[in-house]
Length: 333
Image 1: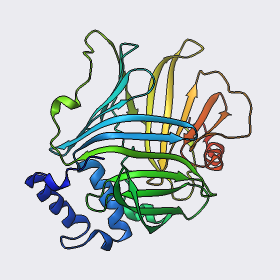
Image 2 (image 1 turned 180 degrees about the vertical axis):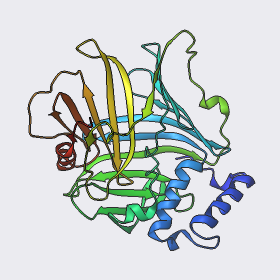
Image 3 (image 1 turned 90 degrees about the vertical axis):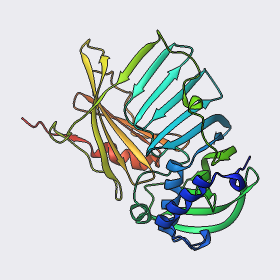
Image 4 (image 1 turned 90 degrees about the horizontal axis):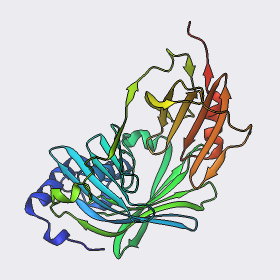
């Protein structure tokens, strides 16, 4: 890992002191942070630090690498992520606007929702919300790409969520690695930086698309806020999970030729998120009473009346099953 901390510009060093006054105290050392201060430092760093590098995602025998450039200017996050495996593509983010660029298809998909919670972020929940459902402990130091970092364990207080083992830069607060653990303690997913330049000025050109997209197909995944209860739909999140968002999306014609609307509800405990999709006009899934799990992601599909309900998220299979079975429809008319 390439480090530039010693040569950080004076304005950046000053900004870190100002930020530190908010979450660790101006004179506090990293080792003196409380659990809440560690979590706040991690989330602040993920948003406000300027960095570029490469991180690797590992799940079982699968491994994927991505390059990332991350900037924070005038309170707005801008980012470019370039997956290095598979078809040519990249993701551009500016604020809450995200563009997914598919080179081989000459297609750009625009989504107005941001990517909160994506590595190296933990999520947008307040530390107290997270600590209500996870026990946190410091667990010594390890080295990630040659850099010593503080190991932090987040152990769930129940069986409806996974545990996490973090490795965090003790000065900047940036998370350098996160491992997701199941109930047995086995690692089921890992993301980790292998290269990182932290604190350097980001050239705006490095945040632009690699290719001209003039003339390419451009799609906007418009989402409108909706009240599912007014539509007759109810669901019961597990303990510690709360409803974060309810939207409606129109995705073209269904199997009956009619315009297909998808309702989506997102529930989260501050670290893990689960999406509930409700669709009419799609083919019925094969009957099953079991949730499917792929790495940390579990999914469960069931029919409720003439609608298909799909629940998917990075939680244990029993959790998505319970959420799916709680979904009910009551005609509001």
